[in-house]
Length: 228
Figure 1 (cartoon, rainbow, N blue to C red):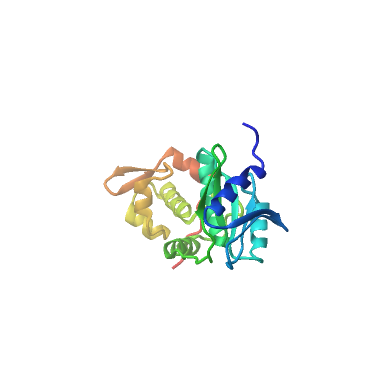
Figure 2: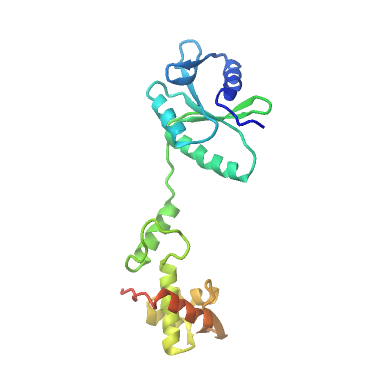
């Protein structure tokens, strides 16, 4: 199949708008597509063969003319496109842009999102989760912009405290480890054993595994104990 061109999108988009009673013309000033219906505000559609920063820039620029701005791209198959589509639909919503998908094999166009003012809904749970992590994290061990893998989190800091205590004191009760290290969830951390560092040797008593010894060596020892 030949690589699609922006002009391949024009007829399906024009047909879609004409079916809604619009008069449609292409390349009016800077607009790829412009549609009028009576005395209503004009509809402008920017055409691109794929999502790009330039496309969103163009869409935002057209908002200076009318609130009814759409971007149109070809519909594709595959999980990668679906993930990309979800992210870009969210971006369109935030920018107040509409989104049209065009199925090039049969010229079918559909409106996926109409333009509307963005009304963000804040997530209290996400906010609280971030605040808890910020407050629990001791120091600033990570450089901003690092990949998520291998970051020093508050959870890992608590696990390191537990591992260090077991290294120095041998197998111990979770409650004692929690009290002595300042890691309130020490028992849960050792029981869940997310990193493979701990093993249960008796009821309520945990010891450090060889992998835990390696973890201490890898992370350079324990994070400072957090004072009350």
